[in-house]
Amino acid sequence: MASQKLHLHHLSRSDKSSIYYHNLFEYPLTASELIKWKVTSGIKLKRDLFFSNSSGFYFLKNKENLIKKRFQKEKISEKKIRIAIKASKIIKKIPTILFVGLTGSCAMKNATSKSDIDLIIIVKKDTLWITRPFVYLLLEIFGFPFRRSFSKNLKDRLCLNIWLDTKNLRWKTKNIFTAHEIAQIKPLVNHQKTHQKFLNKNKWILDFWPNAVKIPRKLKFTKNSSKIENLLIHKFIENLAFKAQYLYMKPKITREVITKNRAIFHPINWSKKVENYLNQ
Image (cartoon, rainbow, N blue to C red):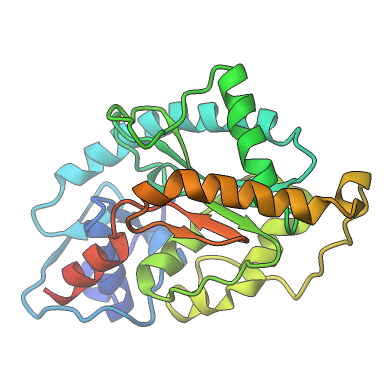
């Protein structure tokens, strides 16, 4: 935690907007975090909002209890992060894996005991649907519990809810929530500077959170050189794997986004929840 202090009278509109945004996630901010999570657009503040500070944290008035909650959730999150780190060391053995990142509440160390562990996976181009079964197979073999469509108890389960290949790194949905989610990703495996390339393709996040992350200059992926990727049959197998998995998932698809180059599994529309909260 940073030891910087900021008097309430010196809180800028951006500071207040950031405090208000993070209040939805029960996440009080330190002075240094107010700088990191400076917000420039997407939030209209109500006139009747009041702010408080205590123990180096800033929050909405009468929300001091969130400080204790934050410390508790940090301890809980650290245990879950250790699980994610161990799992990522297994996943990275698959040669098509370029990036494994922590997302969601664990990435902010804001998970509750019942929370799952959200991960983003980025693979080499045209290998997503071949890679996916091998990832789950390895997790099964090494005893890592992961979220399934029928799972009710999500505690400590790995939730591989974002799959991308390097052909499709640009995020199409551009809003304040998605920008925050991208900015808060914590790399666990990062081959060929894939995380930096992903951020470079999504520079628009700085329109909302300009200080949250440094966007590197444009980087290129090295050409695939493995024998498997150069086989003529490779694309045929990838297409077959996509069709087989899509047919299996099709009856269960609700809000999921499934294409040849990406698979997004978000059962709850948090973008809409955030929009409603900010506009209420």
